[in-house]
Image (tube, rainbow, N blue to C red; front, side, top):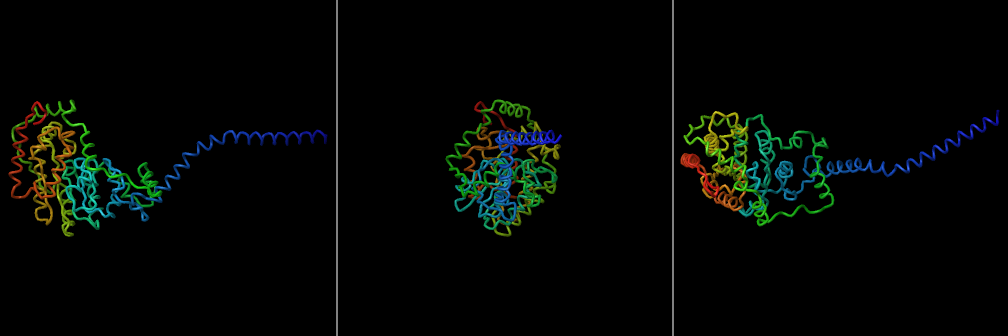
Length: 395
């Protein structure tokens, strides 16, 4: 009996040792796979902590505060940089939507050579809520000398409750200790660059900017868009519409956001230029045919007359604010009558015309005032109502 029990214990010990050896062999065999499976988690955790500690967008008390120019420009990236810009030495700031996005800081510098650090904060389809946040972020910038604001229809026709779907609200309306709110690839790469002390992307030269804009597909080269424009012009009602009977108070972003912003800057002797985007003349027939969703609040009004009324209200509201000018280029034939200047009826992308327009702003020309507004509006009405398309795809 004792002998059998000893044999059983020996067998159990042998089995245990064999099992332990098998487990060790199994672990050795699976170790590479386990490491491979855990690597994404480790890398993700490292990247997460890197962004939180470096804080490239200056969203926390220990923000890195890099120079705004150290970030690469794209259609919406500047909306992430409000805190960075607000704490920077930027002295010339352009604010707006997609209509001013092609205006690179190098073009601003060429038109305003006295500026030491120009910057463009533009993103797609700003609305009242996010534009107001932008204004509040930058209004106290320490070295600001001039601000240019685009008077985009899509922005200033929008009601107070609307907001841009591309704007990163979570960056600014959540607590700083929400460390995951800026965990995305651009923040990771920027954090790594700052941590390693590497330089940012080289700023483009004017020649490079001109080449980039020249490569943009223009309206006459897009058969589908061009045919739609022709159809809109053919259906356009040439009978003059009645002026838009809208009180200036209804333009919420103008009265509750832009006007207080301009007044605050004026009190600091900062120059303010309001830029009416130079829509192609065909913009108005196209918009009337497909009444834009951003203007549905005013759908009983003619788009042209609605646009004129917005500009008239801007002139009236801002006329008494020192240092503020409103600039419009609708009646410049070399801009708004040439479809080859545009990628679509609302977006002018020609570098030559952009530079000409910026130079005009710098000189203080093409301004709208109470005295000349009636003549400006009547000229624009006549040119839009008599618009024609010729064989070379220009009105």
